[in-house]
Image (tube, rainbow over all chains, first blue to last red; front, side, top):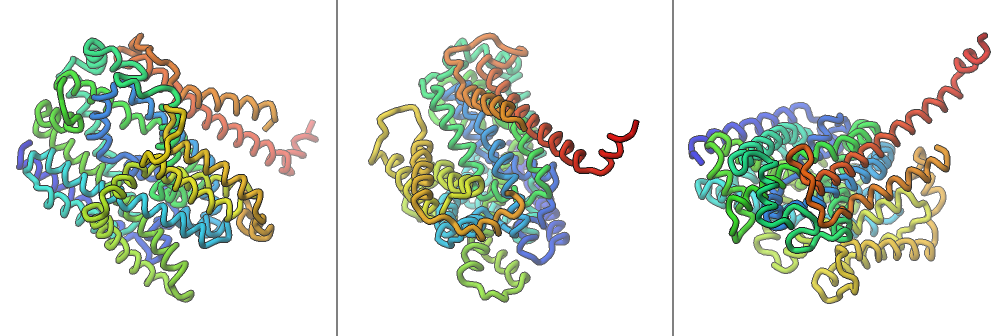
Length: 489
Length: 83
């Protein structure tokens, strides 16, 4: 890749990010609701770009083509997770919005405190959310450094790339909060879309004369590459479905996604988002199939399959096109990172500091200032955790981020749709299912039936315990429920 | 929404979830639209099915809302008594 193109591209991109950050800063008001939710005024186009770009990270460019290289078309089965995510938006998200507007919620965790009348439920959900997201954030940042170093063939060193990513993201998040994040998400979505579609067209044409040629050639290499359950025989119907449940529904419970539900301007917007989102997601989920299989044709014996896209990018694309893809990867990383940073900060400020430590008469300006400080600390914490944290724990939390959050979704959905749900049921369900998940993940305990994702086993235990303990414990007082569900009914 | 309609909707949802599990194992052909292998094409149909499902619920809810509002509105009575 040409150094001149890389530096001009990075300079332009940085300028745009800062300019948008400043714009967001000028439009923002000094309230916590504005800093974390942009004043709950997000329209359909903005919320679509924000959700789309937050959910799709550099993994779509690096990890997905690598996975299709190994598993072939069968890996596309888990793309179905998006429709489950959309179903959660449609049913759970719409109800969250109504209650969020009524009670001024900012995170899913403060909904827990209010619904279950329990700070303990809120604290457990908070700890699970932060423990699952902080290492994931650190991994994204480290991935940013490694990707930029790899894609530019050491033109940009790992440390330089890491520092650059952190500084740019922090600058626009700290300046304008949610508004800056969303405006940047729009620009980043456009860059990602152009990069993904452009790269797929050029690479598939050069390798096999187009996407159809890629599929035919891949089938010649190994017919299992174009059918289920794939060359390794992993993707059986139960495995596909349970993985979709874990990624799609667990993904909805991620604070950076569920928080978007509060930020939209109406229930109609959320429902429209749920309908459009699965279609827009195909623009990111379909191209990597062809990229991965094109890589399989071009480099049949690749050891590290995650290198397949950077290799094709450097060898098959023109310097200008490779520059655009480089920016697209950068945009994908930054949009995901900024969403996570803002969510963790909002959880720590609203549900930890304000709930347990802040004086009751604290003014909004001070809270907003503190939110900016916490945002910087969150990034520092994430980097420290990934670089110096206990390796096994870090690895587990990153690997199991989706399944971990799926256990929280049980309590969230249960609390919103079942009035008999109690705090005791919520606490037992979350603690037991997370503990069971760790036992399954570390292989201390193994289920007798194979082909079902560990996260779903833990979720099943969580649902049973949630229902049984709720029924056995004292119901939530009626007045509290009437206060919580005034309009939802 | 009528009870029968709700049962049909639940049945459709279960059918779609079954489709999400990609039951078409070992199917390779045909190649749809010249580039989509059959397993991918079928899954895309399931995606569209889910989108249609949510779209239909939104439409049905909006219609039922309109009917309720129409019943409660005084204009409705005016229209009813007009010859």
